Length: 260
Image 1 (cartoon, rainbow, N blue to C red):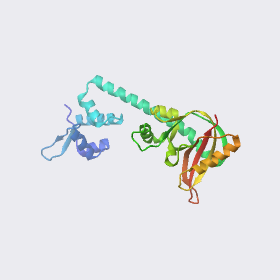
Image 2: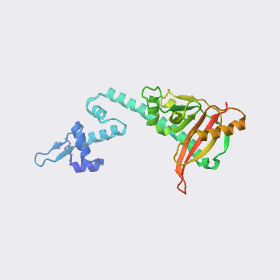
Image 3: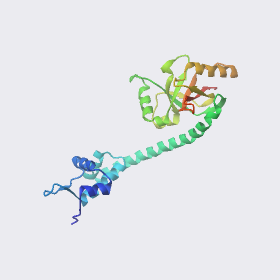
Image 4: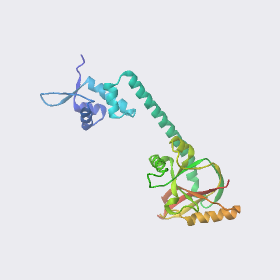
């Protein structure tokens, strides 16, 4: 019979954990070290070592401590297989998420690097389907759950404004992302900005004041003269905020309106 025993210090060193972590596992019933009656010291057996291995394995897979305890002590083999299968789905979803973020970064960074060289220039371009979620402080609003999900996944979103004759002030503000990102996050309530040809401009707002309708009106006036037509809605996406060498605060906005 294997009678190897380890002290608390040795277990902490082997597994790179703290004494409090071991005590916590003990309180949860995950570990049950022998307490030597002669000195009150805990002695960890081979069983405790193998249990620690399983704890760390299941925790690395994203299991809660409660699920970890169930997997080690209470579940039969089919139940463990089902749980691992569910976590396989979790990691598949996680891989998809980070692949989408990587794709986004590969598109965003070249654009950010070139933005400063094109301040004030008006361009035509094509955009993919976008998804805009207006800000709301009313839990009863249909967009409220979408806004919360967007905040929880802010790496996919940018601050944006939608300025038209129907809104003003904070009513203009919201969050924007590509629609395929919103679809991945299962966000359905919001405004779809369908892919189209747009006219756009990068503007530099100096100071900490948010973009206002005056700036959007300047852009609207410029493109109205250029295209000899009216533009109803202006979108503005915050792409960067920073200080320059003179300690002035800048906000770069990508402002656009649909041509289609």
